[in-house]
Length: 354
Image (cartoon, rainbow, N blue to C red):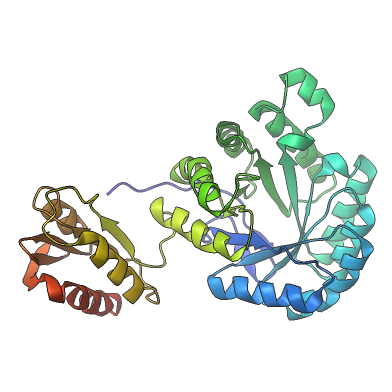
């Protein structure tokens, strides 16, 4: 099996967790409630935490939202990040309220305000995510590069990083997001070569829960397989809970972080000798609570089945209304189709305990 070498970064602490270095790639999301609705926002945050979210961001567009932050920070079960644009007063207020990190775009904040935010964050031990989006690249770089190109995004980030470093501030996380997946990919690859700060990866404005998952997988998969990315968000239109499962699926598919079983299944051609689709659905439902990095193969014929099954931790190669069960490449038993699901689930749970 091939393994990915992760890009070396300097860890940065975000509240109770650290990102970068050898720390697990952290999954983030953002609430879509009104931040000043403290009860509603906390309810959504708790739902995100239960789904596996590890860092949560809230929008802080005005003083009313700032005033809600002390209560949110006190009750939030996750490191709390304030997302601030344009308003220095909101960024400073968020830091004073005790958030773990502020997400700002220095390009829409102003040079002097940026320095004051850095100073406040340094004094309170908060991190700063310097976010550069394709829609907010400084005009001089747009003119130099002919648009919001990967080069323009990276140069904008370098400009802001240099300012922070001259100020003695290094608790930095970087993001360089575009809704264009190729621009996104190239910008992050260049940034990975140039900086040693943790990278927050994502495709901005990816779309609804269906297309957005696919676009995010296309935009983030190549980065993760290159060993790039220390934290990520799958930005979907709608309920942010859907972002969490999508993020973990992308991490699982790229082999970067596998917490639950990965089920590999054949594409059900006319050769299948068992009902692969039904078996996959049943096994997936039966193991949804299992926290174990197992690879389970369910294949319906003898063409690819035995090979795939032997490569997995646990696998079935089916045919003639029955299936041969493999564990770590060794044949265990032949099982009738009616018993395949219960047998496979039982073996998976046994294997997870070892």
